[in-house]
Length: 320
Image (cartoon, rainbow, N blue to C red):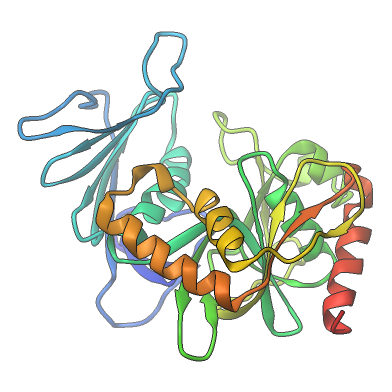
């Protein structure tokens, strides 16, 4: 059985259902085909004709790199914890396999994160490592490194009734009228402290992604949140800073400062070749000139985050 779905502006076909994604009933050819299988025999070493493209400095207790990317007639992502994904050179085909104790849900989380983000790169699309919500018809993006609070901020905005556009991966495109962000899929992943402090939900109400990954899933439609399922013009981009200080944006960065900051917060920027880097700088340069980019710092108290987000949204609606 083939499962059609949409995420990040792509229509996909998969041999298994990817959890949380939006079903697509259209008849147009899929942009990307995904085939995932469980296997005890994962090929993690180089195959004939392949060379090491990237080796992560992070290693596990067995001194295995967390990620090795091999390049040959495509790109092969080998994750040390037990998953391998091959991505075709044009980003149109993904073949993946995982071994226990990982599950199909774990494999899907890789596909819906780094794998499709890199497929976007191969198609000339630049994704930010960010979350996004829609306020008053336009997208607000919250970018930052892992642990910066992107998902917590998106969840807080969503709890206020604003529609969620995407969590963690936000593809950008530049049109004559606006910079546009594509929607992800209707799910936000949060840690236990966010689920308790911001959402006021008993943890039993939010299931973890899998036994291997502790973040809990907010299925937007099931939990009373709104999802914006169409591209949205970008009004502002915020760069989340370490906690402390005032709950308001700092000064708008200059276009040069913004370009450098956005490049530092692009998704998978460490994997780019020269062509992809040139595309990234062209796109992000246009974004930096067209969209306000500002650092944003919250005080670190998760219980106060919804109030800070409400003030931010109100100031934007008021034109401040």
